[in-house]
Image (cartoon, rainbow, N blue to C red; front, side, top):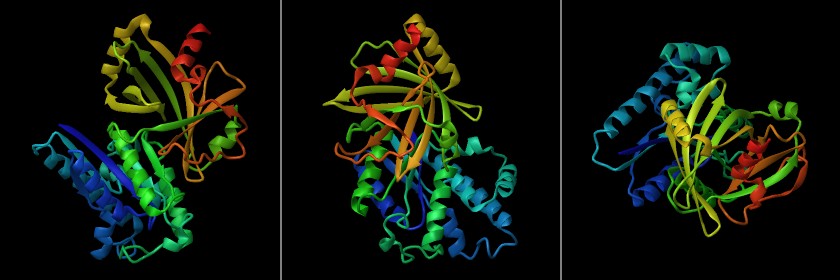
Length: 364
């Protein structure tokens, strides 16, 4: 059984309700048994349990987190009894969403109460897909009509959307689906992002890559939601036309390990990624021996104008870096902040691909 648990989140009036129907239809056709964990806050608030009806906001957040985690546990328990090859558990918001409604002291108290760390909550999900609120760039579609628990004004919705993106920034697979297109296309982009993450072969991932001057790191790290990860990856020998890569991600002292198989079809990239244990990672590294091509880099991920940018800094470059952006369409618009000084686009140039840079690093 392949069991995958994802979160669909986002600011108020982002299209989540419609998105759930799209996900059900799209992935049932692909052979998945799709299970939905309903939004806990809506269940509570429509039932009369809310931050303003409980003794304090902390009292409310403790019971909400408890129910959220218990529901997810029971859904996973039930899923493992099913006769299905592929199960997709879709959480209508996840445990980390709750952080956006608490201050740091309250969040720390909730973590103590449920016996979890923030990293454990984050890594309880395989991927997170954030739908940007209609309050950001599509204000005319912002509505209270489809959720009786919604109470935020447009300005409050924008602020909450930003807090939600920042709350999930530590997740290694965090996708932001913006409002640059109308809702139907937005939901197509969501389905494409989930398909890509699951390793389904269509649609393809389109990556654009740009060479930039080394950015001001103090500016980068001051951006809301900026995330820094130390990456160590190795390209391993294969006997096919696939490229095999293993990766170690370290963020806030927490290490995560992945194996990625990559191949190209008609100039587009298809990736299938799976989590590894530390032991499996070390065994694969040892087995490859001298044939492994290691590469180290520091990655900064930022959200700019509704797009996720990945900035890679390499130890052998002092004056330049690479910024990447993934698009769902060949003619998708790329928007870079003015603080990034563009040298030129290097999409498709072999010498700027990571496996070529790994060889450069070995030569240093």
